[in-house]
Image (cartoon, rainbow, N blue to C red; front, top):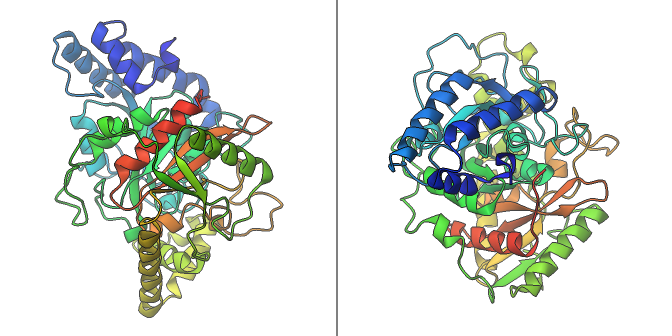
Length: 460
């Protein structure tokens, strides 16, 4: 197996035996960026010199038998939404000046440094991470490594594409309506949105209670390892949870056979592409054959898009109101419409949407007294042509219209993960979503691991 194909866990095992070094792995990732990113456009910033310095330091630690931890020396990336000391954080916008002091690390970046990860650079995002695909006036269009004609999804499309194309084994994205899980599904990798507050955020996201950070990787084990590194409290986030009781890298191997899973092919209201539906149903059957007790059941809620729109658009408007004067003409036209829409909502509208969000959470809490996990498609359609906010010819006008399986679980703040389920006849990836009760991140990972074991997946 070449180092291009190794997961983070396998890389670290090779470091331990001396078979590979962090410098070799980093050079390989940088070469993949040079070879492929001109077409894919996953990175908006690459700092090869800094990465190689980090890799050399990790190499010394491994040689001396003193690695920092389970991910020391693993090449990784971070979405250009997180503050990173010494690098601009432009959030996909031409309205944020790059020429200013960048002196603060976000909690995510701080934890990545502490874990010894070699951070190669920053990955692309649509402006302020506002939509389900990844393109911007600042960075251009990000494409799917499986088929560059197609979108990588979004808004963490740069991170997903980087991981899928072996341009770094790991990445961290953000997810306010599906932004980790959508591109994970489209690019054929694992992407997890943990319980809200599991990974601290600073500064606070304008999308408030919808906003999560999430690990992205080519395996469930790697996802668990990265979550272990990131899931530590930070005093700058008042919603951050206490440290986990046990390590996710161990919990991922929990035996989940015999647990009860609800399979909801449509949530009761979603039109699903027949090929996607068949692939997901086959993956669910594989879980059932492996010993998970699967029952077909819908959670029993209607599409909460109207309430989500209030929360999403109001948050976007608040963020954009802080942009420098004269920014409006430069803002993504679709985002400008969201800005205008968000300005029309009152405090009462926001509180009504918050009440609906709470009611949805209560309903799902009750649902999980009967079912340990919920299984759904991650996205109801395969990847579509890059450069479009919605599938061409679909008649849709807004990105949440084609992502109805993801945003409800931002509203409920539950952990949810997308795991590769299979490929369409044309070779495009399809993801299965596993949703658990709040604070059951370990359970969600364990079910994901079972799926990975019974349906082995080769990343692109």
